[in-house]
Amino acid sequence: MATSSLSFPLLSRKHSTPSLPETTSPDRFPFTSSSSSSSLRFTSINKSSRISICRASSSSSSSSSVIFRNLDADDFRHPLDKQNTLILRTIPGLNELGKALLGTIAEQVMVLENIGTSVLVGENQLSSLHKLMVEAAEILNIEAPDLYVRQSPVPNAYTLAVSGRKPFVVVHTSLVELLTRKELQAVLAHELGHLKCDHGVWLTFANILAIGAYTVPGLGGMIARSIEEQLLRWLRAAELTCDRAALLVAQDPKVVISVLMKLAGGCPSLSDQLNVDAFLEQARSYDKASSSPFGWYIRNAQTSQLSHPLPVLRAREIDEWSKSKEYLSLLRRATQPSSVQKL
Image (cartoon, rainbow, N blue to C red; front, side):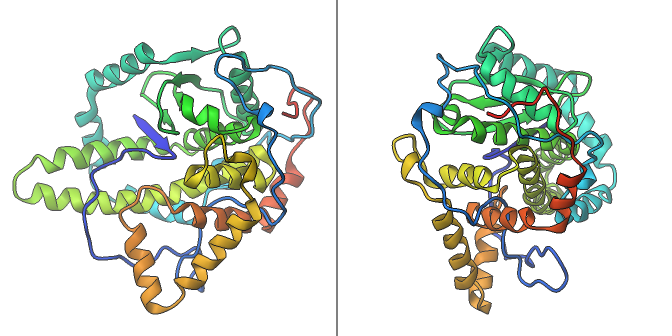
């Protein structure tokens, strides 16, 4: 079973009538945002702090990060994630049909394809990346999955959870080159969020089911479209949850918003010129521009066929959650371990 974040190539997108907006609460209309940001000024990034695939530094200093010993997925799960997961569970036979469509052969193909084309990270292979993953998993109170690095010019990361096997995360080389150590660990934490919340089950089953349904004449396409619409709505909500997992590990909203900003329009040569405050202000201007009835309609049309919320909306969402009583309460519950070190 597989799940992914950042830019998961889910299904082909089709034009559709915009659906109702996704709201975080009944009194908030329409939905305004979705993941990471900060109200503090983003200072220049030291380019030497980026991880080099061939020369990754394993040094770290002493720690200020905290870990969450008894962290449960529902402690940080986004309300829209909870709501849309319940809806997915009402689809009759989704679980059983997904298993039948996936099958052991497809699982083996996915596993072998990844092992054969990527580099497995470990204590003796890209040990700096390995340490980032282990630390992030400890903070989130989850077993660290295997981590692979794959050559690709497209900045991306994704998670595969295949039944009966240890899950693994894959990061592309271009993403490693684009991000700092803290930012890359936030990405790994985002992927761990998918595992912590068992997102892989629903992603894979619904994805495979929809693909299979399109091959069935007549009602097959109608069923697939209905499932895809619901799946995309759920997936966008699941991404908001995993952005929260990234913040729990980074413990600094500037780090998570910087990742989103770079994915929206960053490159290694421009990274030291990017400004978190300006990107957050851009998110606010988007909210304002889309606050009219027509603007709301356009925004909903813009996002209804996306697998991920817009970067500026994710930035606004995580900025708000970083100031929430819920997040601050989680920090108060956390403990300071001796093994987690500041990056």
